[in-house]
Length: 162
Image 1 (cartoon, rainbow, N blue to C red):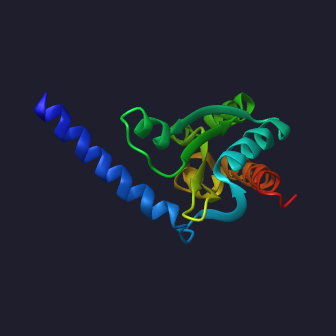
Image 2 (image 1 turned 120 degrees about the vertical axis):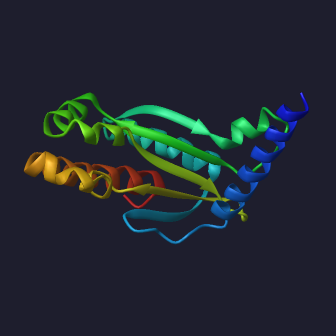
């Protein structure tokens, strides 16, 4: 019991540190796109979900550190990861490169800032699939470029830039 509480406490501290850093906004690491918005965290999550649907992509996964922390009685800033993909893209990706399949679904990351606005970020499909280009050739490169444009449109719609 003591060990379980110690692990839970350690995880809570680690989550708080990670989310505190993310909630301050961050510079785009290589291969990422980061868009700050004036939208609230719940509004940006809702707008992202709607933009995914409007772009005829599938919302495949959703995970929230905020919800997990809340279930343990801990409050942290909003933090949600939304995985997006579509089966026809999955089939094309796997035809080009089986190892590239580990990268799907491609995820958007919504974080709440200290001023209660939210930030949308994601790793571009080209960046994610680049390690597999030698294996997947032109088919995978073309797929990644197509997905880059789709993910940018989703982001633009969700953030109000479209």
